[in-house]
Amino acid sequence: MTTKSILISGASIGGPALAFWLHRYGFDVTVVEKAHEVRRGGQAVDFKGPIHMTVLQRMGILSAVEAASVPSEDGALVNAKGRRVGVIPGAFAGGEINVPRGDLAHILYDLTADTCEYVLGNSITSLTETADGVDVTFVNGAPRRFDVVLGADGMHSNVRKLVFGPEADYVTHLGYSYALATIDAGADDVMYNEPGRMAALGGLKAPAFFVFASELLPSRDDLDAQKQQMMDAYAGGRWRLPELIGRIPSSPDFYMDSISRATLDHYSRGRVALVGDAAYGNALGGFGTGLALVGAYVLAGELAKAAGDHGTAFEKYEEKFRAYASISQKVNAGRLLAPATKLGIVARNILFTSLKVFAPLMRIFDSPAKNITLEDYDATLRAPHVA
Ligand SMILES: Cc1cc2nc3c(=O)[nH]c(=O)nc-3n(C[C@H](O)[C@H](O)[C@H](O)COP(=O)(O)OP(=O)(O)OC[C@H]3O[C@@H](n4cnc5c(N)ncnc54)[C@H](O)[C@@H]3O)c2cc1C
Image (cartoon, rainbow, N blue to C red; front, side):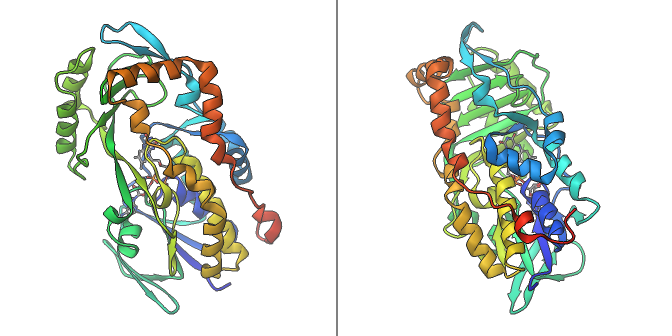
């Protein structure tokens, strides 16, 4: 095997999923994560269709994920007086299995923590490729050398920035931002819209979930500035908006990001490849977690099949995965969640409420989610160390 040691950046979904398969195929795996613990938080993310279920099953975590799942129920669309004007179908908010993102990250971490080295609270500062490896320096600790480095560090990927170039070359801001907050706003599952802004309470997504049109990118790493940006976007609102906005300054786990899409002509460069949101993310598109999980499965499988020949493996990963990941290039969830006009809101409400129209649309929308033939790498490889 030419590749033995692999460094993965990011311990959310794609990173630990890669770690699981790579260890299983006999690689030495190290995962570096910027946060000091595997992060909790985030909305419920969803899995649907036979491809997702097959990968979960092959990882042996389908029942654990099902056990952690939360139900996907219909919610209410309300007007400024709080009167119900339509329905948000559970089928829109979730898939067949909806699992809180943080719980899923912990299931994947628990699966790999004993067999892979996790370095938490650290981050890569430079990657220098040589003829026989990648020399890596870190914010903390001594430099190390790995055969291959994989970036599973999300939409704002550090590995992508270090190896491929600035984020602006690969990430397109789609004109909206979203914010999640835990505020005591009642348990009702409701969603309210004004042109270019939406607030949803309760339900699957988060205790309070906001999507709003904004050409501004949220300021990075400055929570107070983010909160201010969000509160400005909701100024002068009706319904419960003034009350909700008033609670934002004291919200303990506020999270805000832009709705953006990552587009890369190639998922790899030299000994470095990207998986998940770093390579084909699209915030709130509803398929990022499935793509990360399946992408990790294919990338790890191809590395094992090519006996660690990273050049061959990365080429195959790209060839097999690009069409499947194409769904990430097609949608802008902001337009659907926060239509720009009153007419757009009415049309969206009719679409949501009319389940007869909605069900076939959902099937068309989800069709690329089947656009891959999953190889059974375990069976192909017949690796002696496979349990
Ligand atoms: C805290 C959090 C909350 C989220 N909430 C939602 C949500 O509510 N709804 C939704 O649809 N999606 C959410 N996501 C994104 C969702 O998890 C991904 O779209 C999807 O699961 C693909 O996962 P990924 O592993 O590719 O990337 P991500 O889940 O984004 O994970 C990237 C990981 O890399 C880590 N990282 C970032 N920079 C560095 C660095 N320099 N060095 C090392 N590690 C680094 C991050 O801390 C994170 O753990 C959230 C992600 C996070 C991290």
